Length: 428
Image 1: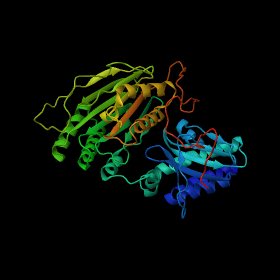
Image 2: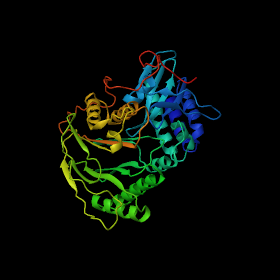
Image 3: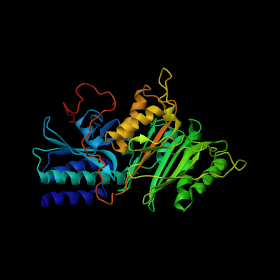
């Protein structure tokens, strides 16, 4: 135990000044000092389809692993440690920032003892913290997570986006955005502040650099006003003014919401956007968050500025889903829309099966892509927030991401031999 603690302490000390390129070697060296055979860091790509090995100095990028159908992918999907007996004994440990999944750590060993498992778990936690701390200035991490170049508009929007998942013991918020490499007009924001969850989903009209700029302006205005103590109406007014000043002619729809984490009261403004959906006990409450339509933002001072602030009281376990019309209006090659009914059916079945919000959204986006030949005609954005305050009786039964679950929903196709139950893969 003393050797493991010394190895982890040395890792932590060296990680402060280690370059991103040296991190894989540092992780592997630490694992060996702890009595393990080796360790390899895998990060998820931006579409959450693959796990990509992080190369060390002078190394080529190794073999990527599918998130669907592999032991590594199961560790990522379920946020739980997985043991593989195919070949050398190996552990797959999720890399998590808060509650956000960023990848997995593969650890090989001649034997697994409770002490080694505990040490590997601590190494995974320190590795995740180090990756996150260095990701903001590392082109290496961005290159690993991207399987092809992004358009300028997409690069600009992604630079403004927060992590896709965040949460506390009272709330979880997860987001998905496609097409990841070519987005322009869609964007989302969520943040925690003073006992509130703040949610924003915007959709700028158009699919070019100007629409991406309009979304970036909206997110910046939203955050600036929110952090200065502004109300939801102040946020809408600020974005309206900024768009009119800096993006004349640029129009944008959006939902701006605030959830009180203590009371469960949800307040929101809808500026010409599809209405959010309230999911309660795995069913959508019809019309719960619908309201008369209001004008989009960016029209300027010649149009009415008053915005209606709507309110609803959530119950513990309620989920709020906000989406752009690119989700429901996505069309297949035959012209068939994905539609709100399919959206609702997919999400409610996923949640009923025990899927945590991030995994439910990942599977939903892939289902939309699969049914439309991997190409969307419009940006598609979804944010799913769940209010789950602690049960005063201490009898909270909501299944966590580590709970065992089945896979009743359609998944992306995997090649023969990629089944998690029958094969294991690792970069040599």
